[in-house]
Length: 361
Image (tube, rainbow, N blue to C red; front, side):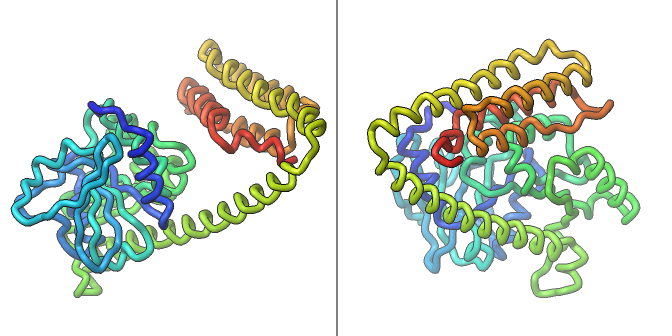
């Protein structure tokens, strides 16, 4: 990403994502994302001669009247007329937002991303979009499904988003017979099953909404049902989170009534928890020297025990750190990747607002 994304632009994206659940379409070039998007919307998003490669990230939301807006890197949001518009000029913007009537958009926004092939671009897109969506539908073409470059890009997606996401194996009609399709699906489940909530085949080309048999046989019915289930779970999670945040705000209001002496007495405890978690980050960052599974598991057990016995640690922090350090290692595990994953999980926690739960104990 050539231009720096301003805090104002990030706030605009956060404002969009706060309105209702949303999911992103991601994948490499020519993975069938555009066909899948048009299938989900029940209509073409763009004029026939315009391809998605002409556009930056596209945020699509519901509205009875079609509207097009562009978001700049500095946070400026401008409405454009599509009449006579040269869509190829839009790639310089940070994001494009379409408002249009489509049933699927009543419950969730869809964020379509540029096709990913450059690893640097993959990181940029993931860092920009994944904090603002509830899950991802990753498109992988059946004739070359789940390539190494896709695996590398997917590692940049936050683990909690991965666990809610769907791997859509597209263009299964181009593979051959049902046995060939099953062979592709089995390999995808074997290699990517732990990184996705579900893995489903789809042929957007064969999906016809006006023909139930075609809609079902193409895989469209199962995929749309899976997306609807993920959206419902996201809505439920958002409601629970809002309730928790409301309770936390009420607790904070009560805590704010404490005397100055009480507040000063608690400050060392808060600072100690922050310091202890930063120590964990430091230990995990130097764990690259660990070379065996036994050494790694011994280190994890030591960190759990040390952090759990700290009298200054709140129960909430202890439980969270214990969960972050709970990993399963086998002979097939990529040890370096496991260490890196735990390190990033703890680092994300240490830098996030949820780390400062010292008032909840």
